[in-house]
Length: 141
Image 1 (tube, helix red, strand yellow):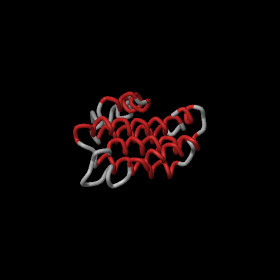
Image 2 (cartoon, one colour; image 1 turned 180 degrees about the horizontal axis):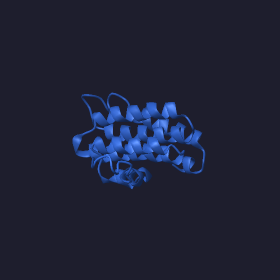
Image 3 (spheres, helix red, strand yellow; image 1 turned 90 degrees about the vertical axis):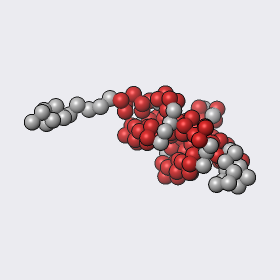
Image 4 (cartoon, helix red, strand yellow; image 1 turned 60 degrees about the vertical axis):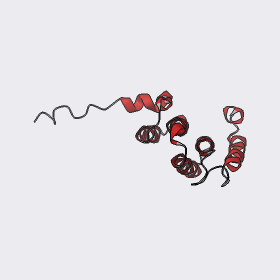
């Protein structure tokens, strides 16, 4: 986190990849063992955020997809919190690079995926709640 905050996304990505590797083994997260699936999802979400901040949207989206797969294997007791953290981190990364539409879309996807209240701490949460009022008189005819 310090590397990313200091602007060294390459170092942050390298460290996040080590965390992913640490928790991605079959003894950590699989269809039969879900012990660290939430942690793996968080690691992938963090990696996705750093990749997006580094300008590699394709890698970021790939890591985000991996995070979602790990979330699907996460214990239901912790899934909503892990979901919120993953989607919030990815949404914030898109927000910071100026892709507001994708940030809001990720926020909305997280809400639909069952994320808990942590998701609403994102910048996109406020934008998602602002609905355009373009349908003024079309509904009354």
